[in-house]
Length: 169
Image 1 (cartoon, rainbow, N blue to C red):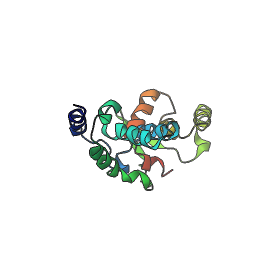
Image 2 (tube, rainbow, N blue to C red; image 1 turned 135 degrees about the horizontal axis):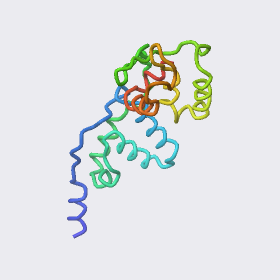
Image 3 (cartoon, one colour; image 1 turned 120 degrees about the horizontal axis):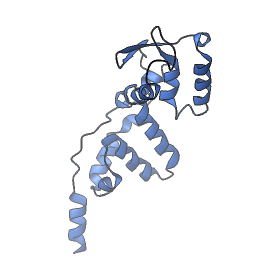
Image 4 (cartoon, one colour; image 1 turned 60 degrees about the vertical axis):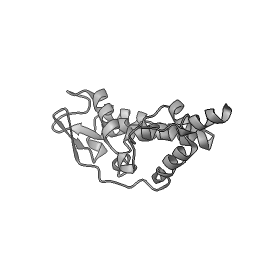
């Protein structure tokens, strides 16, 4: 009876699409989740399973029901995380909700509020990448946090800017 249970248990297959295939698929939000796993999990196996949860958007409970062979194959296919994050060029202009944002290259042209926000986010730069970037991108012909949804912009940056683009700063 128990061997029949083990056979059924280890034969379960996962039918989920992989969301992260390499560094090009890792947005600021995904990287933040990865960073949290690395910092919060002490056990290597727990880290691997939690990373697969992120890469496949699959609950841990479902991963734990999969076969050892399937999990080993999935882990092996995620080897890119052991390599360097490629530096990608950050565009000088980004369009969000029909507004063109430009990259601020000289801090002396920033508003004081922008500078204070930047300094506040720098207290935890790994956890605030999208927020930091929001301080460096302002609407063309406009001002920081004036006439646009800053929180929406930060959320959009987190889910659209790749970690390699951010690291180009």
